[in-house]
Amino acid sequence: MIRASCQAPANGSGVRATPLLGQPIGRPGRLFRKAPSGPLFPRGVRGEPSAAAMDPGEGAQAGVVNFGAGPAKLPRAVLLEAQKELVDYKGLGISVLALVQFSSLCIKIPDNYKVIFLQGGGSGQFSGIPLNLIGLKEARCADYVVTGAWSAKAAKEAEKYAKVNLVHPKLSSYTKIPDPSTWNLNPDASYVYYCANETVHGVEFDFVPDVGNALLVCDMSSNFLSRPVDVTKFGVIFAGAQKNAGCAGVTVVIVREDLIGFALKECPIVLDYKVQVENSSLYNTPPCFSIYIMGLVLEWIKNNGGTAAMDKLSQKKSQMIYDIIDRSNEFYVCPVERKNRSRMNVPFRIGSIKGDEALEKKFLDKAVENNMISLKGHRSVGGIRASLYNAVTVEDVEKLASFMKSFMETYRS
Picture 1 (spheres, one colour):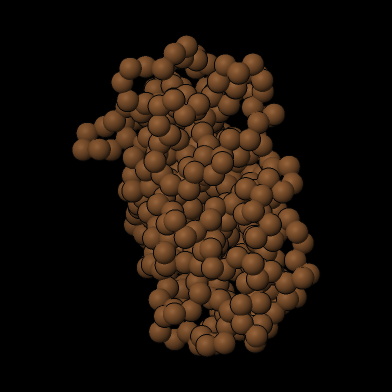
Picture 2 (cartoon, rainbow, N blue to C red):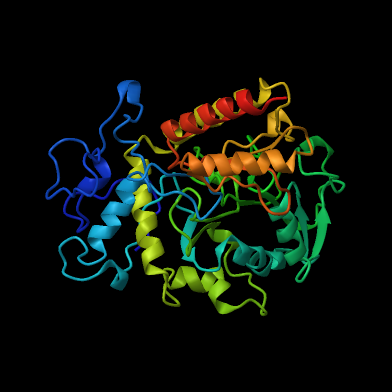
């Protein structure tokens, strides 16, 4: 049931093309009656997605832009297709809620890897990873690279099942990625764990760490499908869907075959990779609607140029905001070192590095007045945070950039 590649299903496979996902929306609420004869998604010049293909997303009718960190914005085409098929899935006469249709991922999955769809979110894998992998070596030790709130939580959870080695001294603040050449890796560790993008603090790896022959595990929850990835460099990749791949409720786990079958006896059966692989992710009732939405989003990404196009757009969108911050003479301040700044989550303070809370509240209030929501920073750090996931368009970011400039001109002392 799981097609672990990025190839589109062949004609006659039983899954018809989804016209709504491949056409400009036109008038709000209009649904297409039959598949067009041309390509599913209109293309821009030089292989880039056209403006029509990169549709305005949810809230488009009211002009509201959602910059939330998750659950994040979904493409409007996805929402309209889901609305249509909620009652009648592809003419079968039954609701999509009664079906499970696993989709291909928009990345190349080698034959010696398995893809499973689980519940429990990324946080469930904070337990699932050690419970499945710590038994690979007798020392029951794991290396953790802690660069933000989520990798810190993962390391703390792993301590229940394993001896955790933090590969670098604890950071005084999560604003950088320590030089990998300084990491103290334990040769007896069953795996090396890191989080590719920290949503709270806005720290992102723009490289895959070289850990030699060690087994590399990565939490890609918040930048999954935002750039191409070489799966062969990892033993396990996992990602919650609610950032770039769909809505909350389903977690993708990509695991190399030779790592399956080592779960501790304490491992809950629903987290046991071997059990889930053998049952094609159907050991327990799966989150049908979340998997369905993921399928629509994957089709949307694939037909808008795939992960390479998403990466190009992510670079463009994030740079627009960072340029304003860097040219503001510290009216806006991003605490993250430039080389480690996230394309997905842009955190900043207003007025100073510590922030002027009154000014930041005014910024958030004015943003809402201008139909931009969910810009408040995480409660643990405060400030402002703009999340620029795949479904956030260039036009959305241009609107935020224009507002930031106007706000700075008005309130700069």
